[in-house]
Structure formats: structure tokens, C-alpha cells
View (cartoon, rainbow, N blue to C red):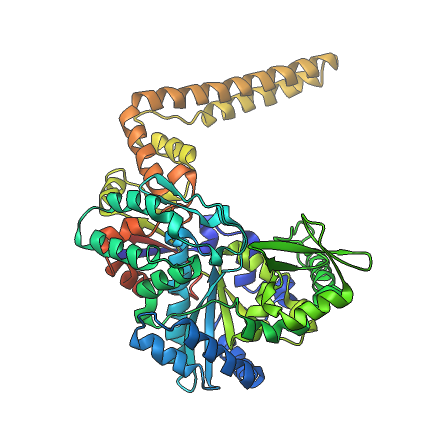
Length: 534
């Protein structure tokens, strides 16, 4: 295995907003707590250490001990949960939905980035301890987003009739789907390991939260990754004041809208918010459903139902059953940072974009805003594909081109004739410039005729150039087909590989070496895209 790197901005895969944030552009400085750097992270750690309440730390450790009961736990995880009892221990966190079989590859990249930075921080700052945390999005109700994965071009789709928070969904209905998938895995050593892991997680009568914990713990527990399901009464008790604030005063809505307006004014008028706030940013969990709470005159209504609560009724319900209330995408970050001794959060570009809307809301709640970090991004190139790339004499930057742009570029490079007709355009430009002298000596109507003829001639050359390129593509059909195949292998359906492929494809070939190489290769603070040849 070997790796090469390219600056993120050069790839075109990361928005200008996120590149500007990572590079510390002045217009964004008011909307975050410092760009990701060791200096800023250490400063953040000292602030969080001083402000994180001891009672929440104690409750967090109690809940984790309960959630890991009966789970086969590595010594490193046990050590990290014990370390969390100390006021000198901070966390680095990533969050993700409970995607079937972990979903696309980028889930692995988020986890590895989180673990690697925790290790780097411990080596650099020995006076503190750092624990990597995976926050399970168990309260999410978008079943469609988590119910499928792709393996070698085949889509495996889970059909379940259960609704509500996905973490509570029973995995029993997965049996027939997983039976088909296990057939695809074969009987290699790594295939047998994966099938055994599926049986211990999804096929052991668990709900999706429990199954995901077992799966992810097996894959990353030896690194000490701590997995938290924050959908717990004891933890949500601490969130009651912020939930009431949202219900009564709609502070999230006000602060986020103000910050969006400020970003447009001070950074870019073209800024488009990743997420727009609502008047109430909470859901109610009941009867197997997760319903949005809507503000109405003199009270609240559950969206999609006739159920109505007075202000007193909803306040009493928050006090008595805080676990039944679930934050949305904008309120969840506050819940996370409230109950964790957290200093940094790893997310994708879209996640970082909505975190950048939240700084003033955090400030209004007197809660420390974390350092938000972009997860590592990568393209995995199998050995056979790497050989094809070398044979076709492709550069790393060539791989980043859209399929048609790549084909056009390479056809021009390997053709034995010149496909560029721009010299002909230059000659024509000279001839038409000479006609300018005649224009000044005759009737004005002649000028229009010259302009029309010039436009016609240039369009004709453009058309001929396209026809010439098309003809060469036919002549070089074999090379074009090879380019198309290699591009589809690396960018399935024209999408980034990390957003389509499942880890199991690479795990079958490399086993635990796959994770080990990602750990060795990724540098979470490098702002680089990684090309990995395996």
C-alpha cells in the first residue's frame, strides 16, 4: 500500500466556503472558535476542562458503563471509559447515522480521522488525555438514508415497516437481506470474519443501535473508540433548560437567522445556508414515531396529528420525560457539546457548513463552541486499477476530471494529429482585422455583413474542432473504452467513491490491514486529499 496527496482546494471536491474556513479567511473568523490546529486545540482543551461540569462527567461515565454492559470490550475501550472520569480527559467526536453495514466509505474516514487526532493530541500534550467518541445518531428518523448499502455495484435494500427513531428498529427483518449479502462475501478468511460479525451484530436479536455498537466496536474498539447513544433519560435531563428555551423563546431560530445574515454581509452575499432553522427545533418521540413539534397560538401541535399541548403541558412533559424530546440537526450540536467534554468535531463539508451557522447560538447559551474539523477524504485505487492508470499515463489530477473532460484531454494527448484548430482562428482574426480598414471607407451596412461573416466562420471552426475530436475518439476507441472503465471503477456513477462503496469491498481483500493503513496514512489536520493504492 502507498499513498499520495493533493491539496483539498485543488481537487474541486470541497466547497469554497469550507476551504476558506480551513485556511482562516478573515470574513469567517467571527463564526468559529479557531481553525483546526494543535495550538487552537490545546487552547480549546484548557477552556473545556475548566468549564465542563463534574456532575455531567459522572453521568456520562455511568451511562457508558450501562451501554457497554454485555458488549465484548477491548482493554483500550475500558481504559478510555475509565479515563473519562478524570477532569483532565477531553474528547474528540464524530457523529453519524446508523447506516446499514456502516453505509458508504466516508463513515470509516470520519472514525479514523477522529481516532488519529486523539492519538496525535496525546503525544503532543501529555498533561491531558484524549478519547475518540462516535456519537450514534440513534434518534434520526430518516429511514431511507440508513436502510441500504452498495457492494460491488449491487444495492442491498432493507425493507422495514417500523417508524420513529431508527435506533429502536428491530433488526429481525434483516435476515433475508443479510443471507443474500453473506453469499456475496464468499468463504475467504476475511469473508468468514465478516459473516461472523454480521451474525453477532445484526442477527442476534438486537435493535439497530445495539447492532451498530457491536459492529463498530469490533471494527474500531482496539483503538479505544468509545461509542455513545445519547438518547438516554439521564443525559437529556441536563438538556432541559435548552429545550425549554427553544420551545418558549425560539432562541435557536433567532440566533441562527441573525448569523446567516451576518455571514452574507461580512463573508459573501452568495452564501446559502446548509440548514435553515425552525421556530421550534425539537421532535417528540412517542408511539414508535418521531413527530415534529409545531408552535401554534397558545400552545404546540404535533405535526401530522391533531395532538395539541398547552404551554404548561409541554413544559411539564419536558420536566417529567426529557428522554421523549429529540433535537433536530441544529439543536443536536448543543446537546452533544453540553454532555461531552469535547474539543473537536469531525464532519464532512456539509456538516461543517451548518456548524458555521451556530457560533452565536452557542454563545447565547454560554456553551463553548468546538473546533470543527473536516474529515479526511480519500480515493482508494486497487492494484489492478493502478496498473491501468500507469499504462494510460494518467496523472493524479487527471483522475479528478469529469469523465468527458478526461477523455477529451487524453484523446488530444495520444493523437498523432493536432486536434487544436486555434491557429486557424488566429489567421482568420488577422484577415478580419484587415477588413476593418474597408469598413471605415464604405457604407455602415458593410460592417454588419463583416461581423455576421466573422461569427459564422468562427462557429464553423468550433464545429469542425468538435467533429475532429469525435472522429479521433472513434479511431482511438480502445483507449477511450479503457478510460471510461477506469473512471467508472474509481467514480461509480460519476460520484466520489467514498460516497458510494461500502468498506466490505476493501476489507475482504485486506482485512484489518485496511484500517491500519488508513490510520498510518491519514493526517487529520493536513487539509489534503489522499490517493491510496492498495
